[in-house]
Length: 407
Image (cartoon, rainbow, N blue to C red; front, side, top):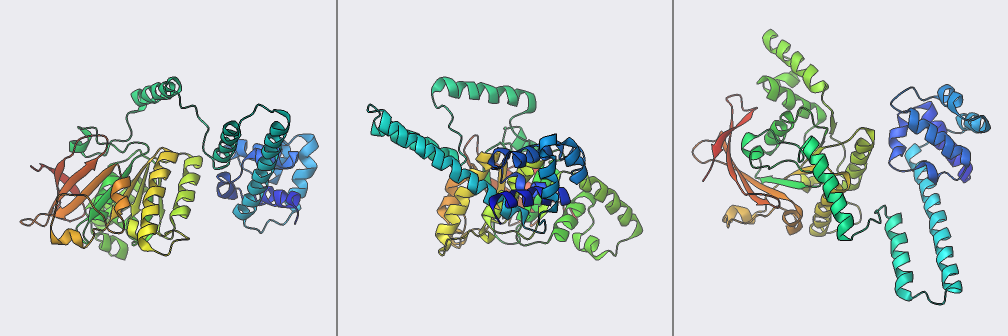
């Protein structure tokens, strides 16, 4: 297939199944299409998606007369294709065209302008490189930075400094889920990391949340959310063998949870695929807080050594939070060295970069005199104070609440 046919396949696939627009939206832009008709059709679909049905009839009716024939041909093109893969071909072809064009301009500049210096040329090349990596070439002078700063302050004045956690003892000290922040919550197995995550999600009723679970299935995650709401055991809920009074409670909780803007993923472990899903959610309506349970189960292609891979994953997640202006919260295991002696430092299993990259680092441990009580020890807070909270499970072991602060 030539590039024109590939572009028709991308548009044809979306007209056949409008949900495929979500698969390609974060990959290709309208200006990436080589054909004018492809660009026009993609722009038309972008304006329609989410507002009205997207199919051959609606796109054809909205298309300019000079592009209607192309739209019809796209509908007849092979559509049983991987739309995302074909979109990448379109995007890559556009990138090569831009690079070739800009390099030609630079070559011509060297030929015609004898005063251009090597530093100027390298600067232009760097700008080209940054643009094609998707990094904005923003101005870094203090006046420009101050304009961006004031815009952020104005936005925070209207909507708040990130999302409140719902834990009053954290919120009173402005320990929020801030845009661009990476949190890491570490504990031994069976201390209550996942229980805390479920509790944290239920305390974010209006936030747009993504949950990437590497251990529990989506059914188990949903059962634990319903258990948190009702006090009924997650295992009992999942078994379907509930008392009548519990069934009514669970049904009501299902309606409440189903109305939330939550994405639950249990079959993705590659950090790059996680990033792609988050970008799609960002494009599709926004994303505020991402929970990952847990970081040591993630992987990244191209790394054979675990330490190097975990170091890069930590950096990638930090960059993802910055890029999408969301908070990424990772649950983490602790290293074996932490069992020998608590030296008061922050460390997580896998790589020292995990603790270095996080903005908020927490260690959780069970109290020795009461297994229901958990010490929530904030040992790193890049933007605020350190605190030690006492959280306690209720009698059903499915909810947590604050007991106060620890000395």
